[in-house]
Each structure stands twice: as C-alpha cells, then as structure tokens.
Image (tube, rainbow, N blue to C red; front, side, top):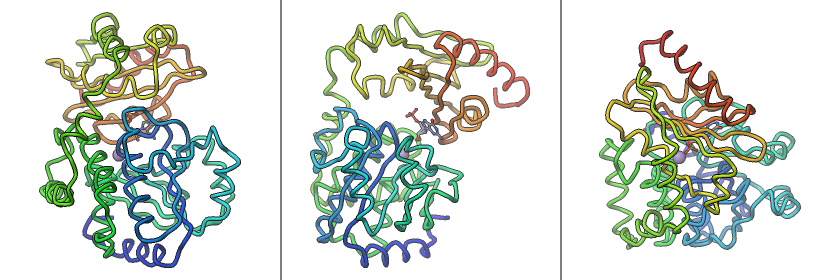
Length: 342
Ligand code: 5GP
Ligand code: MN
C-alpha cells in the first residue's frame, strides 16, 4: 500500500477499538525499530486502557533497555508457556517490523495454527500473504516507527501517545535511518520527528543511551573487527568482516554488540557492498549493506536464505564460517558478472 492509502488503517482502528487483550510481536533479534515500535504501541495501548503485552522471539540488546515498559516484555524462548497462554487469550495480535512468519523463528509455529486476528505494520518490501490478514505495509516509510506514528495519528489515537511512547518511536526512526542519515529524504519523516519533539522527548538522552553508552568490551571488539578482521574485494567493490564464536567470547559478546559494524565497512571509499558474518552456535548470521544500485535484499534472498530492504538486508548460512566467506566471494563474483549492479 501507499502511505496515503487509508483503507487498512480504518480496519486497524476498528480492530483496536473492539479488542481489549492485545499481543504485540516484533521480529527475532529485535533492533531499535522493532522494539521501539513494539513499546511505542504498547505504551499507547496501555494509555487507551487496553491489556497489552509485548512478546519478542528472543533477547533484545542492552542498549534498548531504557525504553519505557521494557521490564514487562516477555521473551518467547525464555518463557514459552506464558507467551503461548497470552497469545491464546488475546483478541488481537499486532506484528511489527517484519512481514514473513519465518522472521519470528520458532514463534512462527504458534501462529501457523492460531486463529486470533492479526494485523501487520511494517516497512519491508514483499510481504507474505500468510503473515496477517490485515497488512499495513509501506516500504517507503523510513522505519516501522515512523509508519506506526502515522497510523496512530490517522486512526485518531494521537492523543494517547505518551511522552514515553514517543521516545520509543523516536528511537526506531533514528536507529533505522542511522540518525536521519539514510532512508530519510521524505519531508514527512521530519514532520513526525517535530511532533515527537513537541511531545517532550529528550532527543539527546536517547542518542546517548543508544550510541554513546557502549561497554568497554564492545569498543574493543569493534577495534578488533576493523583492525584485524576487515577485508576488501576490490574487483566487486565490496568489504566484509567475519567474527568467530571464539573471538566473540574473547570480547564477552552480548546481543547487540556487533550492531552497526557492517555500516562501518561501507564507509570505505570505493566500497558499494559490505557484509558482516557472525558465527552463532548452529549457523552464521549475515548482514549486508549497500550503496547505490546494488540490491542487497535480492542478493541475500538468492544466496543466503534472507531478505530485507534494497540497501540493508540480512540472511544466514548453515556452512562453517570460513566456508560461508568463501561462498560469499564466489557468489558475489557470479552475481556481479550476471548483473550490472557492480
Ligand atoms: P540487520 O543486518 O540489521 O540484521 O538487518 C537488516 C535488514 O534485513 C533488516 O530490515 C532486517 O529486518 C532484514 N533481515 C535481517 N536478517 C534477515 C533474514 O534472515 N531474513 C530476512 N528476510 N530479512 C532479514
Ligand atoms: Mn525496521
């Protein structure tokens, strides 16, 4: 849908008005936009007198734990029983910042069988029909948080957005745009930021909590990644970083510690594609960022079972870390030879 299309928002409005128990779910490995939109919605719905809950598929990074309501978040893989009971009792489920059941990992199975009405609010391209019957899908939005604010406003719920909810919404807009660096050329984004500022958010405090509150270990891991582990593939205008489990352990890795590393590899002159390979217990998680015409989502979908946005995508590999990197080099060459992107 286009952001000007109001039909899905009307359905959202009616469902919200008629539902008391609401469950909100963001994607696996929630980032600032995923948790920000979940808690922005959670705080707003609570203010409307609803019984809302946020269930994340897995843990979220510490740099988001200042968000209002974060202590009420239920982590599915740590509390399956409680999460399932809440979903069973709920009258409405809201999916935020993802558009395919595979993006919520094991939690997806619960919804394959569940009949609770579902609404998706998301800005990723190519939503899957099975995700939810009502889909508010706007890829032109900078972030799900921007879209959420727009939706709440259009539905007539703006008066219920508290300062605390506004802080969560702002956090999602700024993390998904690299502090209004990319994906942020629509004037509407700034009108929303202006509204959030009028609601009294402390912008500088939010930036501090997210970007300038790093652990000593994380900064050392970044130094190691850039100094020892970054490689270039000049022929394909690419750069990448790979980190093994051993290296992550050495720097006391915590969820979120590698956030943003992939962007740094893209800041090199002459680099149009960057990748970050992070070895997990049973797979390698991959992040891609691109500049210009390189379709990171198409590349990730074709070779690494992933997807995402045109210039920011992710995927995974079941091969070993070094084999994954070798495969990446090979398929990137193939992809570039077959297309004009690089
Ligand atoms: P990140 O690199 O920050 O994890 O993700 C970048 C973008 O790609 C985000 O919009 C995220 O939702 C999407 N993404 C990350 N991993 C995957 C994946 O495994 N599958 C799909 N379809 N999208 C992903
Ligand atoms: Mn997002």
